[in-house]
Image (cartoon, rainbow, N blue to C red; front, side, top):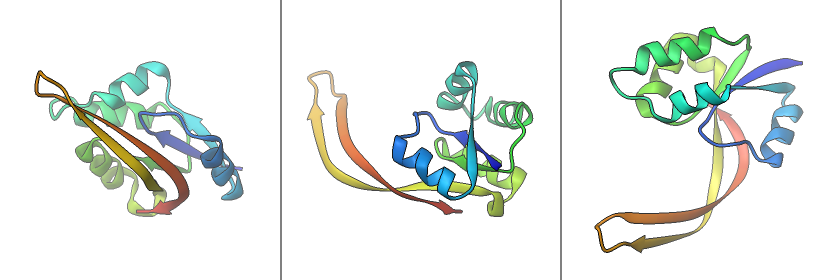
Length: 117
């Protein structure tokens, strides 16, 4: 079975894991430290952070979503033909404006399938 590196800030759902298996992939997950790095990439840390994560794993292809620059660097580094993203449908969104000016947004998503970039 081929290996799919999962570059996401959140956990895969059971439906997503099943979809990967149906595609012939076994998921390869980042460590907790790598997840923390992936979820807080800055322009200054982008290149070293992404390359550090990619070099730490053996994989055939990857799922990459998150910081636009980080995803672009992954695509540039390993190629569009080896990268996928999760296509979802959004089922309802609730925005709550707080007195301090921040906004809390809650959305429900349902996995449809993984698509190649």
